[in-house]
Length: 90
Image (cartoon, rainbow, N blue to C red; front, side):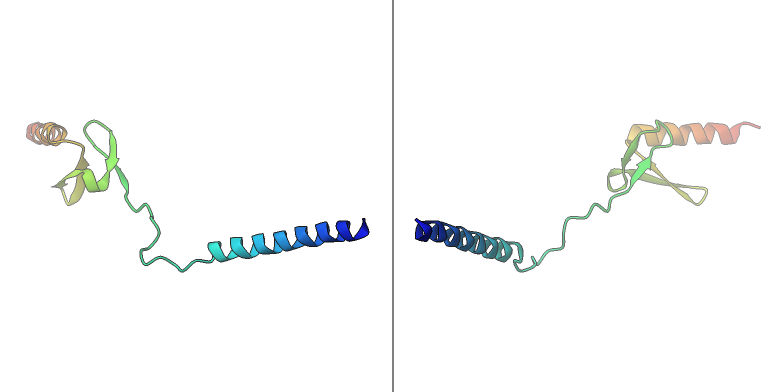
């Protein structure tokens, strides 16, 4: 009976040892050739409709040395028309 208990304990220890070896070898794989996915896009606000959009998808306009970002051609056109109208007022 004592031999059976020792056999069970040794079998369990061997199982744990092999399991740990296999898990550590799979987690220490070679680094991939491509860098990890990092979110680098910035959200910008459309000055006309106040919608936040990714900078890479935005339409731009240079006004008074400042870059403005727009969500659509319609918003850009409406904003530029509003700016022109306000510049004409005394």
